[in-house]
Image (tube, rainbow, N blue to C red):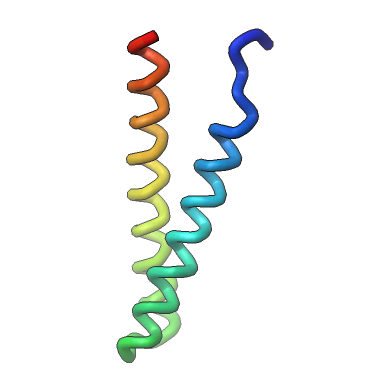
Length: 63
């Protein structure tokens, strides 16, 4: 259990969900239907989660 950081998974989940909501609301605001807007938000959420995860693992490898 040594070296486990509780904040990394929390930051990853919160940022992914915040991105999903932000992109979905922006798409709906610009006139997109709710169904496709939800799909675009999900894709954006996955991209942000992968980017943040790779940044966390790069920092861990450098130490």
